Length: 408
Ligand SMILES: Cc1ncc(COP(=O)(O)O)c(C=O)c1O
Image 1 (cartoon, rainbow, N blue to C red):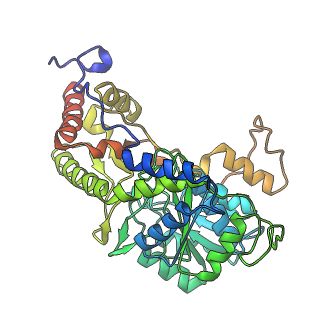
Image 2: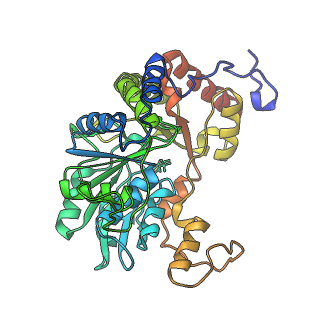
Image 3: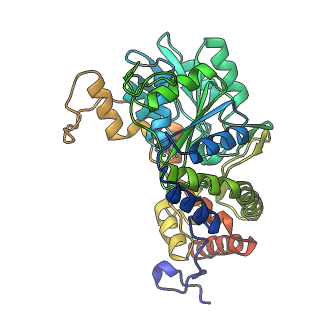
């Protein structure tokens, strides 16, 4: 193989695909056919979603689990169930999917961004403490990439300031902080089962909690304000129809049955890749706190140092690595700078029409210099790339080394 980079027309290091997603077999088929033949396609008379909720609650060590249409709606319902609304502030991270702050906006509350720890990419508990005001009602730590946030500190801060704690565990199925599964470490925890996720039902989400009262409120909100003991047309509060279908219940049961086996493979490959990357300057995997006893590895995130690659900007490195047959991306942009969220801030203050996307004079969130810097020099691999074997990881390292030689 010549040393010409693939991006310049050379031979790529790798031509094989990484494992494809979703992974499924006869179990999904069997369970889907059971739903089909039963004629019970909705949760109101079927049993698959209820069965999954029981298994998932046991899996995450929560008393209750409730399936809803997405991680986004799980977050929105959770905040609504806690009574969060206009005038309230919700502290969260600027390094997440847009749904985390948009859930706060959708209740009428204001998301307040607090910067992240530069080594872990996770919400910095010290800065959380400093951002608390008399309007703060909740904190949403996000277990980004499947890596649990410091839940000892988060719980301590929430307890000390009488705040609700809602875990955004949308990427963290089965992850554990200090031997305890995430999700029910705060008041409510939210999961996503969207198509890219390590449990994939096409779309879907779940809320978990140890509080029977909150579980019932969430149930009511996701079921157009009904109560369990009420009549069909009895609606006690305003709610949505955020119910999922039995088709998703069937798929979720099958996907959950494979999760632990997949987790072990991802963990093994992630550990191997991190050890190999240790041999190379310029790519530092996101730090994993030793108190994290299980990482869900939805993403494999690395911080890029251009000085080790001849000063190449990160996007050029990403293009070159992708061309070598290693799909990768820069990941999130800082949420505190996202125009849609800044427009939402203006809308909340009654300043603009949210559909007027030409408005440039938008209000700003507080700066988050760490996230703004890191988003310029982060490289993501996906969970599916960790489902192969050590030779696949070696290809990733070989491609990085090839680019490094070419930029020396
Ligand atoms: C951290 C995080 N929060 C929330 C969500 C929202 O989940 P969904 O796409 O199921 O609405 C996602 C999904 O991408 C996510 O990664």
